[in-house]
Length: 132
Image (cartoon, rainbow, N blue to C red; front, side):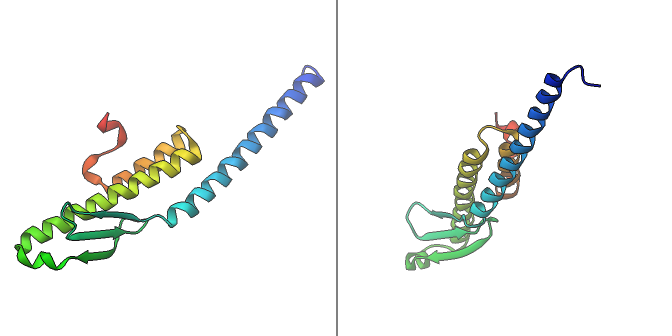
């Protein structure tokens, strides 16, 4: 099957390199997963009457309202909370993008992770390709 020992050695080296590459990618993915579980997104509105924190899944985990909120209509406050929550999710997405890029560079795996988070956190923005 093999023409000579050199061809066999070259094939073995390629397989070893491939195995090492897969192990390194798995380790990077595991480290990235641990990092991303710890991320939170934080935002506040322009007049700092609304502060929002979301967890690594984009779920609201903290909401702080300044007493000045009492002087405005409830509908305005509701809109501020929603907008600030979206800003906190955008902050989380920026952090996820940075972490994925640091782990995988411009690799398709990193882009897939970022696109997955983007579609869950900011569904109105669409996938990365749609924004280009």
